[in-house]
Figure 1 (cartoon, one colour):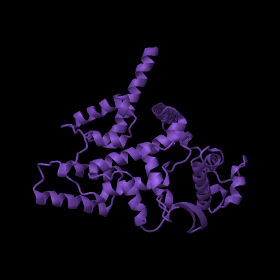
Figure 2 (cartoon, helix red, strand yellow):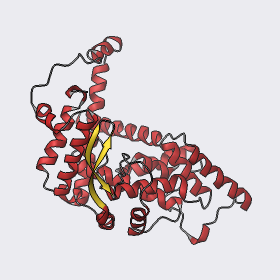
Figure 3 (tube, rainbow, N blue to C red):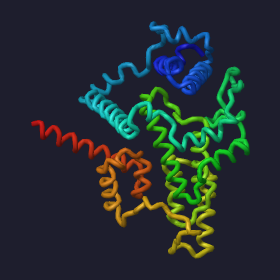
Figure 4 (tube, rainbow, N blue to C red):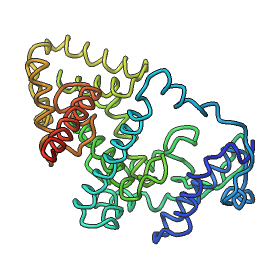
Length: 343
């Protein structure tokens, strides 16, 4: 491979973060990410100056060059619509960023670990180490938890002692509703940190320990925790559908839940098992219209409007795409009201 195979703009951003971040941990993580980007393109640190240079090497013509012109000729107004969509997306990102900064009081406070993150980082601290890992294109340094990498580059299972430390650092969910709540929290927190940093990379912004815990909760929701009742089972099935999974393991888990309910005669009555709470946030409407109205209410409330579409969908009992469509429609209606008032 060559320099043409690396995203130069993204590499520059990650490199600048590695050199300029006030946080030593963030600098180390960014440098490790820069090294991984180089390695994935078959390059080394010796190639960094060429990538950072202002003048880019000659490269073949982009196959998408002229696509916008072609679409404009075929569909007049395409360029304007595409530009408006990009502007709307950028506006939404900036609006979310400002919401995050207001929530925490400052940009730096938004980046700083929360109490939940600190508890996990502290529990995992004895296991965090930088090791040389061998991949198909060479051997490179990588941050791990006693040799195991939660970002997916490791082979095998998480070490038992690492798992035990992360399981006990915070209360472990007892129901699928609790697991869904925690997973939604981690995904929202990941977005918050990314917004505070300006989304300089496409990967997770969570620390090693936090990302590992997030994956553990993901697995618990998908496979590990038995469903207590039908409402719990809905969390599991929606979790798989949201991710568009075609996974025999999750299908087996859902089937096992259904077989257990059938054996217990639990098809029509679902008490709270063992006294454990069922998520109070899930309020399913009786009709599709009522569920869509619930989404509108949540999107109109500043306290819930910033939540991810997946979480709002879970609470209302609809699909994330439904939430996305309603969010987009409300934004257009508000924009129309503003233009109407200005006129």
